[in-house]
Image (cartoon, rainbow, N blue to C red; front, side, top):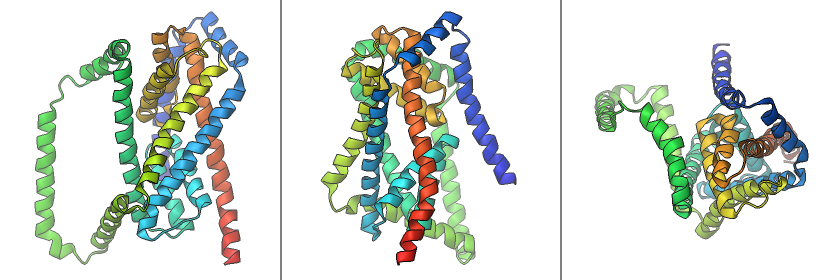
Length: 337
C-alpha cells in the first residue's frame, strides 16, 4: 500500500507540473484566441497526423532492431514481437513516471525471454547514453544552422532562466563534495568488504554490477556496427520527419522549411526531457519556437497540441495493446514448445 501511494504521489506531482504549464499559457489567452485554437483543430488535415504516427511506429521498429543487436553478443536472441512490445510498454510507462520505462522494458524481457534484468538494463543504459550524445549533437547542429535567429531565443528561454535559478550554485564545490563522498564510500567498502561479502545483499549487488557491465560491453561486440549506426541515425531521422510532416496539416505552417521544422523538433524534445511525456510544456515550446518564424502564437500552440497528441495517443494505444497481447502471444509460444 505504501509503495502504491508513493507511485501515485509521484504521478500526480509530474501531472500537476504539466497542468501548471497548460494553465500558465491558457490564462493569458482571450476568448477569441482560444476560439482560434479550437478552430485550427477543426480545420487540420488529420491524414498528415496519421502519416506521422506511421513514421513513429517505424522509428520504434528501428529502435527494436537496434536493441536486439545489443542483446545478441550476450547470447540472447529474443523474439522481435516481445522486444517491440517492450519498447512501447517502456514509453507508455514513462508517461506515468520518469525512467519507469527503462525498468519496465527490462522486466518484460526478463518475464517472457528469460533475459536477466541486470544484463538487459546495461544495454538500455548504453542506448540512452547514445541517444543523449546524439541529441546534444543535434542541438548544436540546429544552433549552427540558425545561430543569429536562435541565439537570442536560447538566451531568453533557456540560459537566463537557468542562470537566475542557480545564481548561488557553485559547480566546483559540488564536484568536490561528490569526490569526497565517493572516496569515503570506497574506503568504507574496502574496510568492510570481507565482513559483508557473504551477505545476500552484497551478492545481489555484485550480480547486478557484473550484468550491467556485461550489457555495456555488448556495444563493442556487436556483429554489424554499420547497421547499428544506420538504426541510430534512422531513429532520430524518423523522429524529425514525423514532427515535420504534421506542419502540412495546417495551412499556416505548411510552407515552413525543413530548417525551421528541425528547430521545433529539437527544442520541443527538451520539453519531453524536462516533464514526463512533455504534457503542457511541449505545446508551449512549439508555440514559442514558431513565433520566431512569424507563426501566430495561437496557431503555434494548436500545432504543438497536434504534435503532442499524435505522439502520445500512439504510445498509449500501442502500450495498452502490447500489454494485452503479450500474455496471449507467449502463451501460444509456450504451448507449441
